[in-house]
Length: 86
Image (cartoon, rainbow, N blue to C red; front, side, top):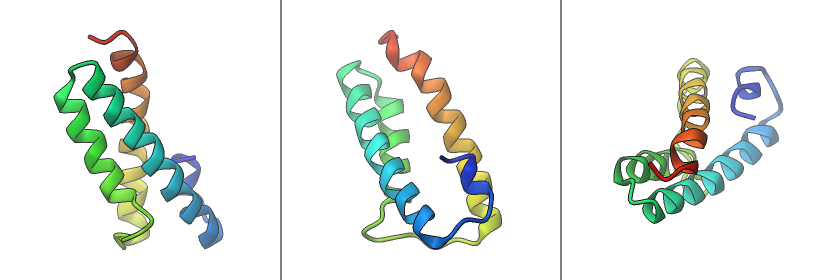
């Protein structure tokens, strides 16, 4: 979803994206706490705050494209790091 966010979609897609990323980030932060991975907890806590749909942070499209790619990469890396609890 994050990488698709690079394209132009209706505003509702980006609202759904915010909700999904916030929920997944909160879960990843919790998972990081359970695995005693404080740096990942901080990273995903920050991602959850950045994407939260309740008090949205408004940035221009170019900045969101960069953020979306970085966060997609973080999620990709975390799958391997947090899965093993290392």
